[in-house]
Image 1 (cartoon, rainbow, N blue to C red):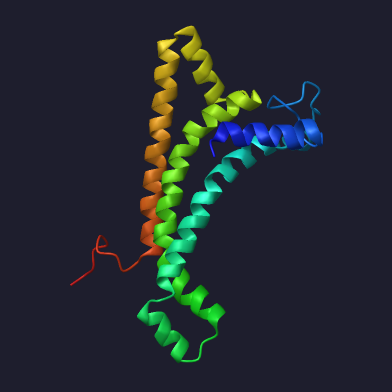
Image 2 (cartoon, helix red, strand yellow):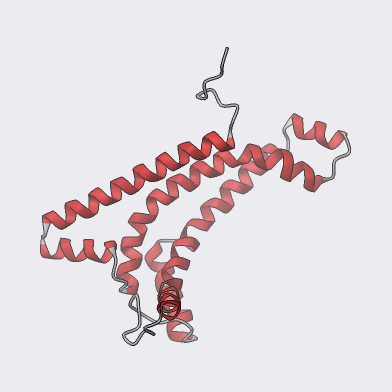
Length: 183
């Protein structure tokens, strides 16, 4: 589902219907002056936008995880681990999951890059002041300098995530070919 539909559904159910969360804004106008109070107020206001971004991305992770683990369950090395008498939980956690992690990490990296684009829509729906709302206002005002800055920050975000994913691959797949070996 698109992020704006999920955002509106969460707003209707948890904001307007149940009244558990605020309907808009990043902070209360009368936020407590103390540091813990203001942090809790900000977290309370950002719970629904954050939940929206997580819910939108969760289906892709569930489908990919199911597909990868289903494919790995038939792998010969897992049959050998089962033949040794290892319990199924140990076979999955110690043998299958480490081999599925690089694929899941790739999807995580791609989705983290997309979060910036989804955040623009979600910030607009929830009226949260952030880069997304700034981008929408800059487009409406035809402020090209601000638009360029927001797009530059978005590109830097994608590059940062890609760099972090490269480091994560080195931890997840230590025997990979790109790591130089002595001798």
